[in-house]
Amino acid sequence: MDAESSKALGFPEYWNKRYDQVEVSEQARHEWFRTFDKLRSFLEKELPDASSEPRILHLGCGDSTLPADLANLRYRDQISVDFSNVVIKQMQSKHPDLDWRVDDVRKLSLDDASIDIAIDKASAPEAPGS
Figure (cartoon, rainbow, N blue to C red):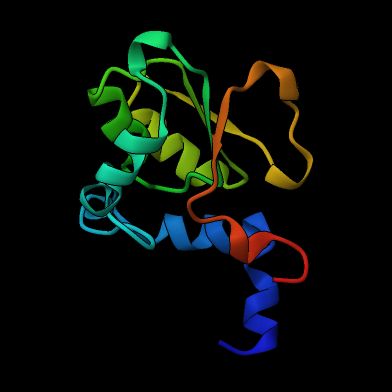
């Protein structure tokens, strides 16, 4: 990827266009970086027990299945944020029982103290200098 293309990753317009071109049904076939199955043993070891009801923030969630996968393990208090309003609408439609919000990880509108765990699975390309 050239420098100009890399720079585009830091803007919601790039991602809105990308997600506009992807059918919601196709999203299930794609997962950035690692699938839940590959992450599960790590998460089970590192996350507190779901019964302690930790509040989990997914940074730059995109169309990842991770929030839904964790909900299946009884992690109910999760907030998933992405700056692409297109993908947030898609995920709200796909998983209406979960909390999906349009927000920018570089300047979150959430109170830091309200979050117990932050998971940044895929937003590194949007960070300045990455």
